[in-house]
Every structure is written in C-alpha cells, then in structure tokens.
Image 1 (tube, rainbow, N blue to C red):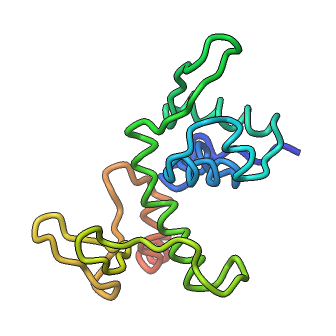
Image 2 (cartoon, rainbow, N blue to C red):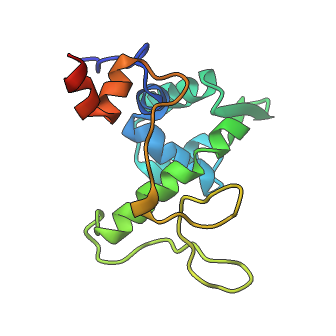
Length: 167
C-alpha cells in the first residue's frame, strides 16, 4: 500500500517528509553525510534491497538532494554526492542521532559516533542560536508563531484559545 501523500499540505515538516521521510532515504542521507558515495557502499552499509536503493537514490536526485556523476564508463558506474540542499539536511540526521543516543534507540547502550570540535576535542550538540547575537536560546524562551505562509489552520494550531473564541 502506498503511503498517503503530504503534497499540498501547508506545513514545512510535511513537505520535507514528502521528499525525505522514508526511513531508507534517511539512512542514505546519513551515509552520504559520512562520506559514502557509491551504490555498493550504500547497499552494504544499510542492507537495503537493490530495487529500493535505486528508487530512493532516484527520488533524492529528482528532488535535487543528491547529484549523480559518472566515474566509470565500462561498466557504467556512478557516484552520488549531496547537493547544497542535501548538505543542509545534516541538522536533521544529527538531531535524530542525538535523540537516538540519548534514549538508546539502537539498544546497544552506547553511541557509535561522537561529534567533537577538531581543535578542542569537546563534544558538540545541536542548538537553536539567535543569528543576531550568536547566543544559544534555551527551550523555555522559544516561541512558535505563525509565519508569512500560515493559513487559518496553522493560526488555530498555534493559538487554540483564540481560534476557539472566534468560532
């Protein structure tokens, strides 16, 4: 059964899931971010069936998340690399890895990858940063508000008491 499409839904999360929401695609993004670039390397790393791998790489290419380049003519062999749009997804895979590490999602009791500063060797974590001050903003100060593309549904979701009063 084909999953429900989120196309046309006024939500950036739904739109992103429409492009990369498949679990195989997320593992491919992980591998691409780690520097893998060849079909056989992806297959071995993920244990992904070949037909599924071909379809996912093709979909990521169609959405300009990866680009394919030929590295051998006979037999024809291609490499895959993240585009700028694809490289921007490192935050997504990093957030998933951090969450999985914190809650031992793999069930193996310890992280397999550590992210550290090259100069200090200190552990690094994702954070929301004020672009004007460069300061990390703590969770309790974060406010979600409707953006310029918000419709009535988004306004109602972010301000339920107001939408109830307006009914």
